[in-house]
Length: 271
Ligand SMILES: [Mg+2]
Image (tube, rainbow, N blue to C red):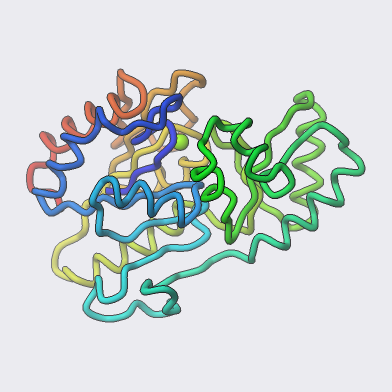
């Protein structure tokens, strides 16, 4: 099971996952791995993962890298590097590349946008409502940079076009534009699913992806089942697929629990 955090497992406003906790614990008892997939950084995801007592791999910064705890699988997956006790599969260039690009664009788009590195911990706290500790984690990025847009929609399109012409990939999340390399949650999902599939070659892995925003779409398209979580601030993102799509009635972690329970009832033997 692959799940987005903000607006899905975590409440859009309070970042709380309490309403989903019974469903999270039920999954663990059923031996269904819950993979956290987020635009968040490794440090941020590790904090949530610890609170959830989650021991599974996780996907950081919109799919830029997959972190697999060392020895989680019997064999180290190909193309991974060992770092800080994790087998890491990386797909994207480092953050510094995007910081240079944004500094250059600040000349043409003055006061139309802000980004985490320039805002600093205090600025991030103002933009997100995070605490100082949380804002520090959010700023410890390795592969991408969140940008808050303040200008008009036409200007935003031009801004995004500039970024893309310079080789950046730009994904619109619930609150921020994420500027990164060519990575997506769907590719990371497929790679990690292949790792699990290698454990049970005779039985196809059944998976579900859970998300609420446009940056979840590739992951939602890649999984066998897609669970769209209702957002209090925007519509469901459009999906190309029609089959195997569930939409929650409730928002955030309430909708997460609702959808996961429904999925578990429909797929009683899933792992
Ligand atoms: Mg989200």
